[in-house]
Amino acid sequence: MEGNVKNRITPEKALEILNNGGMKVTLEQAKLILDFLYKMAEIAMAQCFKNPS
Image 1 (cartoon, helix red, strand yellow):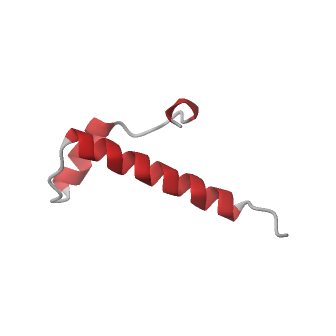
Image 2 (image 1 turned 90 degrees about the vertical axis):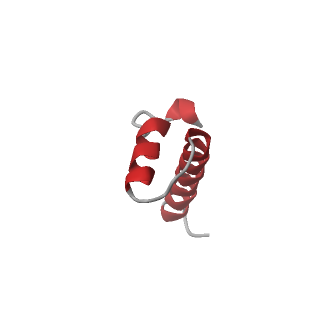
């Protein structure tokens, strides 16, 4: 999935954002959170543009 996304937030930036918001996570956890959020966005977009059957 990473190869087809041009402007992906870096795990380091996500870590900074999460830590500033009071969520203390590791870099590995930030990577997992980003992967999850990008996958959810991909699913949401597919649902929005799905042709009605």
